[in-house]
Length: 129
Image (cartoon, rainbow, N blue to C red; front, side):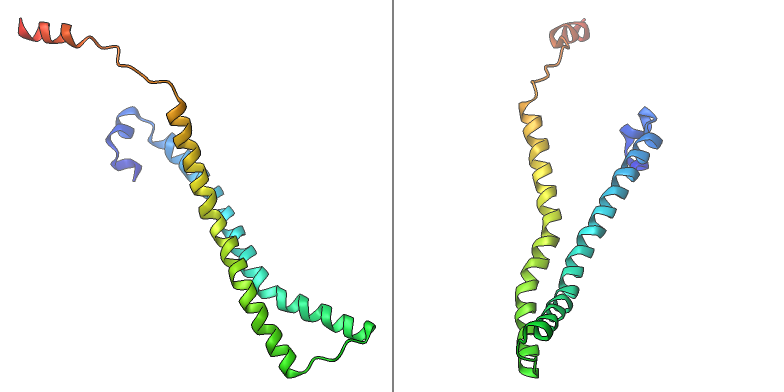
């Protein structure tokens, strides 16, 4: 894709820019894999941890034993509660991207204006003669 950009080809920066882009995209992919893994891990391991904790409490604190109705009700409630949590974790990467975009826009707006130092009138006079 960089090879199709005329300005990049003309300046000879294609190798340097492609290296920078590949390094930053690798870091982004690693971050996205971690976020998605955290999202799915929380959804998959929460029932295991919750039922394990309940079994330990039932064994040592004499809680009532789990029957089928409690297990399926608990699983349904956990699924209903964990789906928004997993969505929030996954959506956090998009939120961070949006915040970074707004930060770049803010920096651009706060930068000083750049004026062109060219003298257009002298160019027009030279063309007329």
